[in-house]
Every structure is written in C-alpha cells, then in structure tokens.
Amino acid sequence: MTMDIRPNHTIYINNLNEKIKKEELKKSLYAIFSQFGQILDIVAMKTLKMRGQAFVIFKEISSATVALRSMQGFPFYDKPMRIQYSKLDSDVIAKVKGTFQERPKRPKLPKSTEDGKKKKNKDPNRPAVPGFGQPSLLNNVNVEQPPNQILFLTNLPDETSEMMLSMLFNQFPGFKEVRLVPNRHDIAFVEFANEMQSAAAKEALQGFKITPTHAMKISFAKK
Image (cartoon, rainbow, N blue to C red; front, side):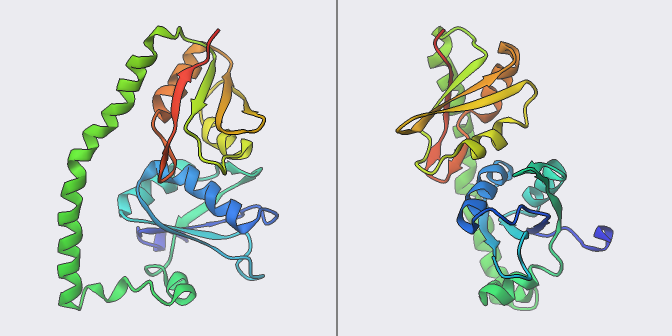
C-alpha cells in the first residue's frame, strides 16, 4: 500500500503511545526528527479518530524520505513507530489547519514565483553549512578532557526530559542510561558501555538542536 503513496514533504506516523500528552508528544517528535532537516510543523491531535497518530511536515522532501527510512519501527515511548508518506500533499492537515494549501502551487504562477523565492532563500543558508564545522571546534576545546564512557551534556532546554534524551542516544550502540541533575534542567550525563561508543554518539550529536534555540554541547565527563 505504501508503494502507491508518492514521496511527500509530510510523513504520517501511527502506532504512537496514546497515553503521552499532546505537547510532550510534539516536543519529543521534534527532538528526534529535527536531525533529518528543517521541520515546518508537527500536527498531533487527541481526538478519538486521530489518537496515536501524528504528521511531521518537513521543508524538503529529501528530509522526509531519510526520516521515514531511518525511523521506521523506531521504539518511541515503548511502541514501534509506523511511518509512511502522507497521502495527497497533506490533505488531512489542510482540513485540520485550513491553511496548508500546497497542491494549488502548480497551476498558479504566483505560487511558482514564491517557490523561486524559497529556492533563493536556500542560498543564504548554504554558507551556514560550514557552521556545522563549529561543533568540531567544540571538540578541539574539549581535547584536554580524556575520553570517557560518560558524556556530559550542557545547554539543554528547560523542557528536556530523561525520555527525550534516551530516545536521542539509544540510537547508538552501547547506550546504558541518562542521568539528569536534580534542579538543573540545562545539564545531564549519558553513560555508554565504553569510550569508543560514547565518542561515536558525541561526534554524531554534537551541536544537535533539541529545540530551534538550544544547540546541545557534549563533552566527555571528568574522570
């Protein structure tokens, strides 16, 4: 069935844990899916018909494709996610929000000029790509800290939860546990089985944005 649905900016996720509050669900989805590209919106509803389901709308179709392949069956709040492309350019979202009108963009010329603007806007972001090199500068700063199987995270947003960090780090082999610091929301420790595994996770998630304003800083914990 999923073969009939062509690639789309929007992915449809179901089999989500229905006990999770809507706001926490959206934050957690953002935390794990923003690594694949810019997210325009996340729609999750608590109506009887829509429970356990969500839509993640990416700016680029390529981001949606990588997210779908990478996260298919990912254990999210103890239930494997089922992901497919949304049917017909987010019809459900258009109905829910009354604003999401991507489909008319082909016949209407003004829309295609907007598309042109979007493409132009992409270019200013291009120089920002070397900015991804900045995390490696952070690595250099932390060189004096010898490798450790325990990582020290800083610059975390207030709403960070143990579950959110666990979902981010348990994608990496050797993950053992997350330890939050009482009365401090901005820092946490993550333990791996060995130093090589902690180093791989540190490299991959250095500078990862849990929210649009908080880029996580990761160093080896002091021994």
